[in-house]
Amino acid sequence: MTTTLAAPAARTNTLSARTGFATMMKAEWISLSSLRGNIIALIIGVFLVVAPAAGFAFLYGKDVQGASGDLSQVPWAPSIANLSGQGLMFAIAVAALVGAAAIAKEHSTGSLRTTLTAAPRRFTLIAAKATVVAVTVFVSAVVALLLAFLAALAIGSIFGLPVGIENAFFDLVLPIIGGGIFAAATAVFALGLGALLRSETWAVTFSLVVLYVLPIIIMTLPWSWAHDVYDVMLFNTGSTIAGPIEAFTGDYVIDLVITLAWAGVAFFGGAAVMNRKDA
Image 1: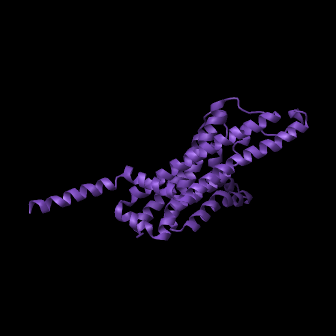
Image 2 (image 1 turned 90 degrees about the vertical axis):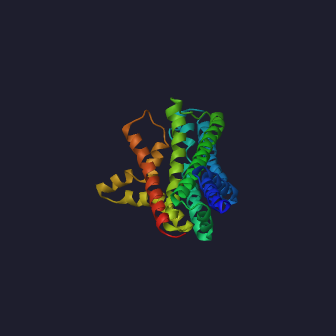
Image 3 (image 1 turned 135 degrees about the vertical axis):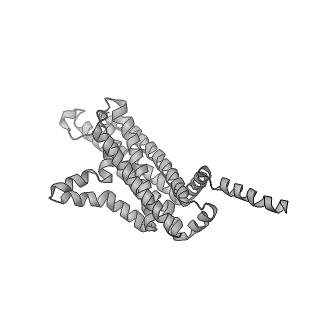
């Protein structure tokens, strides 16, 4: 009898250890990195950030070369620092794709039920997914933007394009970090929508509509409140924190908070639905 009673305690401890947050994060990282589609999407995202920077540096550089290096004759030529962020919108689209797929794909295949059997704490599970996705996308975006700057610098310097960096932190480091935060927030936003809608297709579609379509529609409206709404749209606030600034201001902090709030609202909304409904 004594031996029989001791077994359940050991089993409970094993289950508790198996479903810890760190263990879930490790499992989610394995899941994210083992899917070829995710790796390909991230690689394509990096390429789509670097390629426009390099391409535009070459095209504008040819204009400068045609003007014999006289920048006053080509006032439209941007600086190398500005060129490095030309492909950010592609990184944001890829971030939405990766974020939505992280959970919606498991809904569609039914594998989420298996995951919940091993890790029944649903909020901890979706929090682990969001953390892994956010960190992965953030690092990928930062690397992509840094490579884009180096590519634009290497090509633009040949033709004499201005670097456009007066303060390395505010003109280069902070925009790169801001771009990473924007991409990570977008990924978590899409992940939350994936948990809400339970469909990868709808989550990606809705994310892209919110990011790219709604701001355009709102800007065409004639009413003054439309401009106020536009100011708090995810793409607008995210683009602001991903751009160069002269100094930290209250407006910058507000844009940062609003960007993170978009991700937070979608995440907690998705977590609430996931806790109430069956997988």
